[in-house]
Length: 573
Image (cartoon, rainbow, N blue to C red):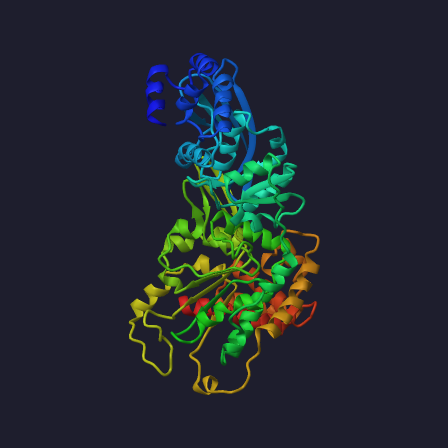
């Protein structure tokens, strides 16, 4: 505002006093421009639009604009209707509808972004309602729709097409639209609601474009969005080539061919992956446990489009996507550190966020040095291991996250790592060894299907020039085995592999010969195995038979499955 304008402001008052402004504009238009110079861009169009706001938006009749957005709760989104009402009175902006601190602060971001973009907003009392009003709103993703609603109240922007559009995005002070979390579930909700188009930050456009049957517009700033909605600037919708993306992002940097020796361990891992079974590897340091675990995703069949969308939703909500990786095309591999908290592993918080067990959904969760994890953190894994989902209850409500993952755990046999090693002496006493092993509870071990002893690698294996079997060859056998299982469970969409079979399906699909039944009976009696362990043996036996292409489970299939269950009792008793 110029010096002249400041003096006139003191004499006549603010532009929010319509009667004064009408009189000034009628008799002394140049004085009106001076007064307004601090409230709008210094152009004739700016003065005229501000005058329109003064005359109409501060009159007795209020102006109302409606615009649609969405918010994420759990792994899904729900529609949020944003109502912006401009009325007379002292200048004030009020946001209602259970906003959190980030949403309440948006009024300062939005008004500054509008001014720096060359637009204006109602100078009277502005009320912004976020409906439904009984659900707490969080995050800055409502900045863009609130800004457009405030501009629309001044009738500088026609709000009638907003019925078919949805908007999300955070605003910088200069009007730039910044990336937000959870855009993929927002796009799915917008399509479900029948919206014609979704406007998202340009950095999130490829992520949202995974959803078909809705136009996705990636916008850079508020000016570009405003100009497009007024028909002044063209903007093309973003398209995603999912087929090409899958083909370009299905490679791995590691391979099972890198692992020397350990043939029986590789066989056990192949069985585990073929049936989706959980596995525990026990062996001394340097035996290759971590090396094997990191290569497990390379032999799991590729993600289907449905699995990829479901996995990407979870990673989007957690804020793990970026412009270079806007789509999860490979199986997740999550190796949390053993110092992780219960909430970090399971998920939670005031606004529940997915934990590591959900981020590993459709992939692998690797817990290295299993006994070093907090006992409470390990025990909370019982539900996701059994049910394939995590339920988090908070005062605001209950959220369920999917968590169908393959658990791969590794540990040493004792604190020093050399218990039972014939070449190195163990420095641990019996009490130390027992305390170390008891950090892993029996109920958790019962939920792990295969227990594998991983011995130290022999020199002849390390020095051997013999080519090891590659991940591609193993993956081919695993893929054929998974196809048999999918055909078996084609009428049950909740089951996609043998590890997910319910009790009734065990009776239906795990047919045993008389010799096989007797073998299991003896094993249960001699090894003192639990009823849950019996179910695990049946499931693993079914997988081994599938790998062999057999319909009936023979004694050799059962004996191999029992071999993978004996280690827990001999080591922990």
